[in-house]
Length: 244
Image (cartoon, rainbow, N blue to C red; front, side):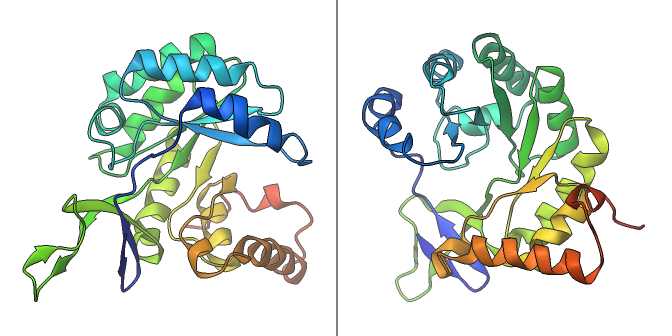
C-alpha cells in the first residue's frame, strides 16, 4: 500500500482463504449479527465464479453477492471480464443461472464507456451495479528511482477518484433501469448525498475507514441532518434529484 496526497494506492489483491473456508469458519460467526451480509465474489475463470456463487447461494444469512469483475490487482480474470462487454455478459449470465438471490455487479472505471458495460450486465441478469472500483495508478520513489509498489501499478482509491466516480454514477444511472450503488472517495455525508443526487440508490465507504473507523456512523447521522434541514421525509426523493 502507498499513501497519496488525496487517497491510497494498493496492490493487496483479493487475498483470502477461499469460499470453503468462508462457509466453514467465517459464516457461522456472522449468524450472531442482526444484519444482512453481502459477499464480494471474484475468480480468474467463469467456472470459478459459478462454483463460488453456487456455494454462497445456499447460505441463508447472505441475501446477495457483489460480483467483482473489475479489480485491477488481479493478474487474470478481473480486468479482462470487467473491461469487455462480451466477457462481462458471459460471466454474469453464467452466475445468474446458479445464483438465485440479489446479484450486484461491481464495475471497473478503467474502460472507455462504462455505461455500455453497465447495460451489458443488466441485460445478462444483474439486479444492481456498483461503481466504481479503483483506478489504475502508480507511485515512484524518486530517490531510489523505483516504483513504491512491488507490482509497479495498483488501485487508486480515496478522495482523488471522487469526481470520476460521480460522473460515472451519473452516466450509468441514466443508462440502466436497475439500482446503482455509488462508491469512490466518499468521506463524509456531503459526499454521500452528492452520489445519491447523481443517481445512486445506496453508497459504499472504503478508504475513509482507514482514517476514521467510525466514519460510516457519522455519514449516516449527517444524511439524517441534511434531510431534516431540507425538510425531506423520504431518502428516495433525493435519488437522481440533481437539477441540470
